[in-house]
Image (tube, rainbow, N blue to C red):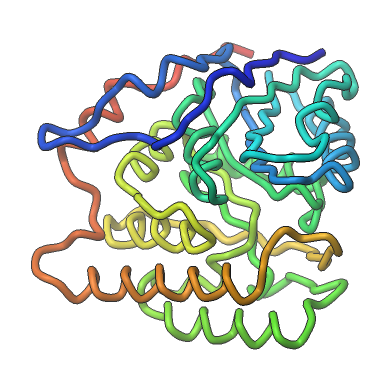
Length: 290
């Protein structure tokens, strides 16, 4: 079954004003409250999205809680949105639009419009297997507030490695970001889940829209002394990525440098602001009893 809302387009993302947050963005694509909602940012993913949705739906159907899948179409020019129209194991799939380009913008759009108890995102290419979802729910149920997949922590395996140039770029990125997220071994794995009220706090304050957006909200969590749980993954490099190594890689490095400059500036801009926290809590998740 599909719940479809491609007409609600986000062109600018959440707006912050001097008093805090403009709350208008959260109601225009309101979805039913569920226990777990999985966000999939997608840009021209017609060749890979179907398999990912099938795998996710299969794993989610086994969970003893209510769940939903949301595909955030980030301005695709192929059949990405139409592909998500198909049913997957009877699980509702909703397609919403995000006209502001960038993976970070698409993920933010999905999370800030979610009414779930727990919310997270995974990539459209199934690089991280969907069979980790039940373990994620176990950890969230036990009180872990942020659970992130890691390709480099103990117990993880790289089943198919990235090309050398991407491995070198990733190594450089991790080296430059060292210290911003404590001892976290991997900030860029596209498999992250949260207590939804906390996710709103992080994504309301974060501003990056490109591939370094993960680092920004993880730095916010770290500087605010919020524990981050790493989950080892079996990771597989997939063909067909929309990542453009030169342009997107350069942008990610520029975003990283901007975060580094903020980190060294006056005050503590990488800590959650009390006003943001208070307003995010007021928009707390609508829980579903299971």
